Length: 62
Image (cartoon, rainbow, N blue to C red; front, side, top):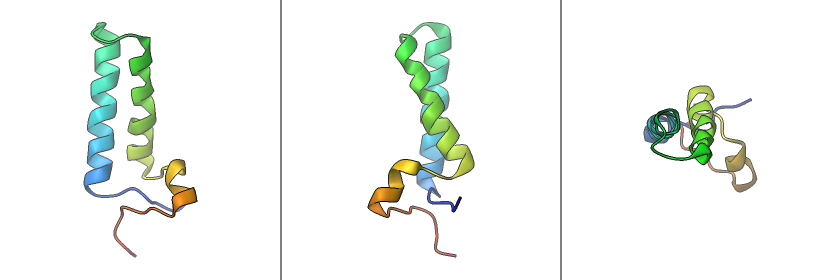
C-alpha cells in the first residue's frame, strides 16, 4: 500500500473524522456521523482507495 494522502489533506481528514465521531457520540448528529471513521482511518494510514482510479496523490513525491 503506497501512501497517497499527505500534508494538509491528512490533517483535514483526521480533524473532520474526529469531529464527526465526537458529534455522533454526543448526539449532536445522528448515527450517520459515524461515517467519520472513514476519513479518520484514511488520514491515519495515509492511503485513500478512492484516489486510486483517478491517480490522485496529495503527498510529496519520494
